[in-house]
Amino acid sequence: MAKIAILYCKRIKDVSCVACAKCFKAVDKRDGEFAKMDGVQIVAMTHCGDCPGLVVPRVKQLMETAKALETSIDTLYFGTCMKLAMETAACPIDFEATKAILTKKFGVEVVLGTHAY
Ligand code: SF4
Ligand code: SF4
Image 1 (cartoon, protein in one colour):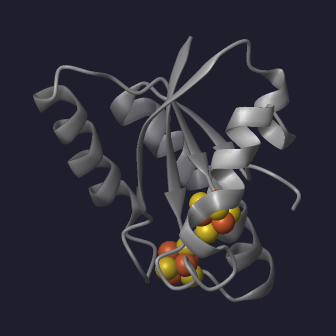
Image 2 (image 1 turned 135 degrees about the vertical axis):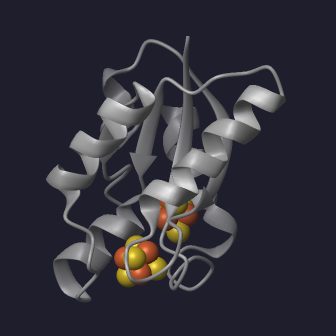
């Protein structure tokens, strides 16, 4: 059972997907990027750190919170909202560079996108 956290675009959550219901459905139905997983437990869902791309300090806070609560995070998903922000809305995050930093600093897998809804 993989323990996961989902990050969402702080500027668009509850605009493109109300209440993040799409990602919860995708996890439940193993749609999209979750189709590859045998089992998934959502440990946390939080924003990306806001512009201009403050993901690394945000993930540091997230990891510290998980540790304080005696849990852990194996995989971080950047929600489809973040993927779209990068592709269409001048989001300043460089996914590959950020993924490399997060993997090195926190030992997590990082996946871009969640579902295709
Ligand atoms: S793509 Fe997922 S994380 Fe992003 S706003 Fe929609 S449901 Fe929430
Ligand atoms: S545009 Fe990018 S950095 Fe800005 S809030 Fe959205 S995902 Fe975060």
